[in-house]
Length: 599
Image (tube, rainbow, N blue to C red; front, side):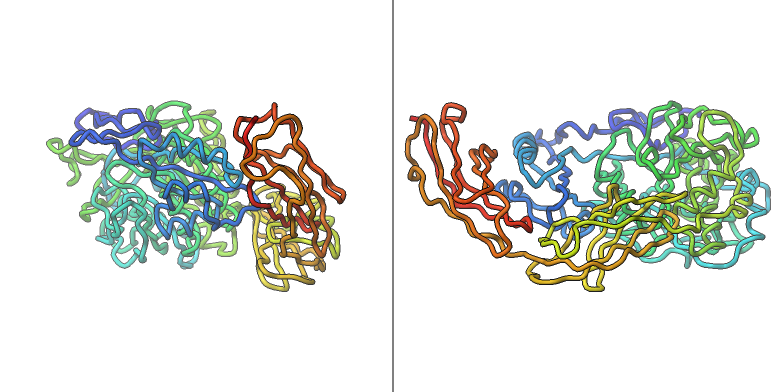
């Protein structure tokens, strides 16, 4: 591409230069120094919670540092995937990270990666004037004859969307996750162009969108400098909660993160198809979220040469699922219709204005084709939509897995209609269980799409869900004691569901009692072997009693009376000692800490 024309790149590494723009992006792993005052900008951390820890639990380590979730909404949304996002002063980031890694409730800590939009700026042709050849290359006109008018909601996670021109009346109320920005308006144009390719009206004016009956749910996750994975993950979860059927993300970055992967898993488990641009590096480097499993990753073909060959700038590799034209028409945020020509009203050499090129624009074409398929098959889940598109694609080389999308052929595909199977689940009938105890199905099988989620019901009401194998949702029964009825619902990725038989368990949420009956007094100097005598009791029985020194278990006893010991020579000079007891339901209780010093 000529250097005069701005290319906004999707999928570049955070430290790479924006292609054609000459602007260095900031590394997500380094402190950012403000040139004006030389102070380091805060570091944003992602914190994951371990299984069995309440999803909305406060992390005591964060409390000790005076830190909390970035916002109440983000806290609520990320609790769905057991994650938190916190901003930490740069000079304390290392200490906070180290402390969190030692917190028993924390499964991972990482710097929140950043993503950027993928494109090569806008160009809009009109369909009736032959300025949208990309639609014919995807066999979209033939697909229009085979679908009904069912309204499909497509979420566009991007720079925002302006409801102008062909999008007037097509954009529903959305949400911004960009810090300090409440509006979902689009000052840059990227999100509006993407949305116009999906849903521009068929009204004899402007351009023709792939899915004219679709509506756009704008989710603003990108500011002028890109956006964090936590913003994108929150946007995915919010879009799912707000009835999106398909999510398009014409954005990406080279860094993997658990929080974005888990948000994608959340969307998949709720039957939502996620479509993402593969990136414009012209390399096999993976771009995320496109490279996550169960994301429909889209590369770009060259519209100018018939839409079969890969463009020089499209990413490629076996992780790229399908291809679609990457040089398109579009409508920008000012309502201007642009196309691939210097006669386009959006062409402006002086200000580096728009050419609509990039995998950013291949992706919404595919999202629109998926929406047409969903319009014909409203009950289909994301897996069915994705499979129909990939299995009907026209092979076009080894640079992507399935080939160029054929919208009309996708409409002829079938889907999985067979329920999954299972042999049972644990715990056994009448077992004593606590809040946080897992209910695990056994012998899970599915003949085609694979198991997508397992939901847990208690006393006939939904209680919890797990989206990831081995599919063991945790009970949430705080304060309950006595008999409860549990049941599991196993759903495959195509939406077929199996209900397992109900089972009675006994909820026990009362912690046992435990105390130290004999041991050195608090703040004593000790040497040799220290013995600690304890007693513990519980209505359901005691399973074990443990001795902890500086947070680590050094001794365990399963029979009363409980006698535990440790060697002073194996410990640090200062020893924080306490006893923990577990009842047979798994509830635990600690004694107060005693501090000993090596003599």
